[in-house]
Length: 499
Image (cartoon, rainbow, N blue to C red; front, side, top):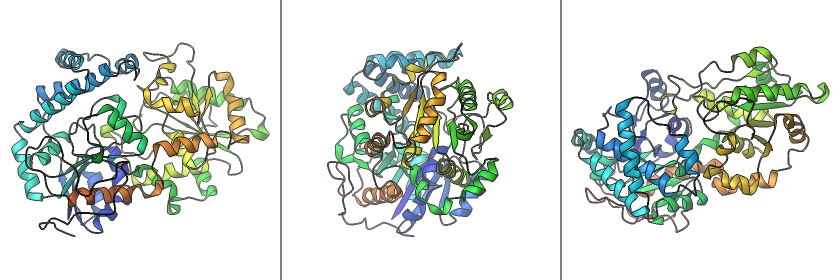
């Protein structure tokens, strides 16, 4: 058996190269990885996985038609779900391009998306986008490359990667089974997938139903509920650093509680420096005997200097910078390292509480039974194009509103009491936190890589599709109707390789 992976960004590296996923796949298969890694990052992972074949994803210039269709799919979904999914907010997060050529493309895409704002027309755009990828000038060479490597399944670790789309379409044209991983809890409402695939690996039954809502044309048997490898490090004792050593590294007192402030990217939360300042000032008002320490972890893609003045005014703030290899501040161009996987797991393990603006970090802390506070107020003279209340109108926060797994800071003056209450009563939202995790991440959480590997085995064992088949048929070794993986499988293909 031969498994192919397409890893085009840092999130895919974190989930599938910085976990034990490759080792699990290699137990009974050879692996080829198409990547977009820098030479230094590639060397690091080649040393870790010397038996893996590494191929660079070809740099293909996206044609105008493909670009318009890809963007039109996104806009079409937003127009279709305008009322249900806070369309006004989502369109506000996609401002008009400044330069004329991309602005014209954007206008064409928005116009086409407005026409396609219903499920059948969106499915038509999916097919047209696939056709544009199939007939691109480089498509024939991509098909030849894939035919030479002959993977039994091709797995894309990021369903919105435009760079991965041509390669995945070439695999479909050859009849190679393909699968996409839905990489984040908030992704599906943000627009259509760029990457075509036959099957989909999702975090939970909740995400499975969400996928069917946005893609009613997908047969439920094509969706496999696996969980996400990104949370597995919290269950790995080998990554754990003793508290004294962790605190010594960060200049902290191991006898005092630690509060983590985790930053978001600049566009999502431009007021984060003010929130960090407010939190630091609030902690100063607490009696010294119960005052926690403050540890700041910035967003990996935020390499700006926007926090510098706050850190100068509050020297008691300790900083734990992510150990990502950053470039130009975009999620597609920053690369996590195994060292940061360990660092983040220790930040969560040794901190008692996290404070942020609607971040997934609240889920990370919940996994270890720890509370979170979501900031929900606008500072004086706020930056940004919309008030913070609009952030929490986005569809992935609906279940947060219903379950209330976090505490809410509605004013800066409330921060001190909220922090004190969370530290004194950490189990106050415990049942809601667990319900949130149960709805969003399949358990056992630490077996996600194993389930992902098994899902790919099941896909690889099915009969290949006929070339140019636009939509996948039923999987022979298919998941149950609820998306759980079957233990039965069809015979392996006679041409499979093992290694």
